[in-house]
Length: 121
Image 1 (cartoon, rainbow, N blue to C red):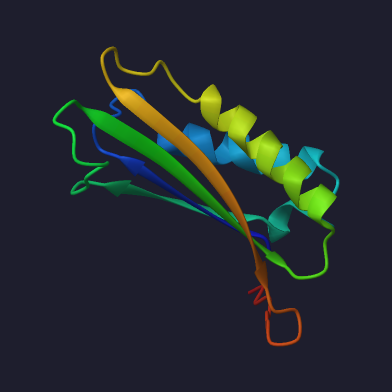
Image 2: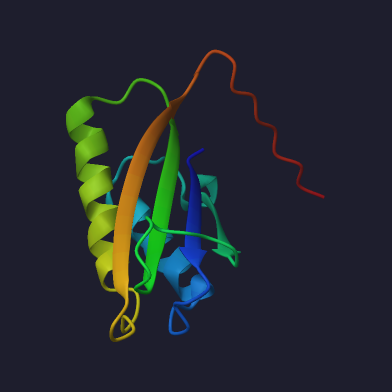
């Protein structure tokens, strides 16, 4: 915990997913909300098949979903969302002529049912 999922459209050729994930992870560490940097797990999925609306002009998106154990205040979740959105805005040079939508969603994971174990061989 937390788990960060980033989806981004394939028509964003300058977006480097490895760099993006590291920047998101660094922002989460800097928030002071997480006990250890190794608790932060992030992954990225490039979406090859997508539609944004119905217009014929080219569009793209980056969607970030951050799943947290339940119990944080709405203010903390808003701060995390705004911090991740700021990172997303500066991920890459956005392609000319493409309308890009950036979104961040914070979701609660049920603390009572979440289980985790660390295997260290």
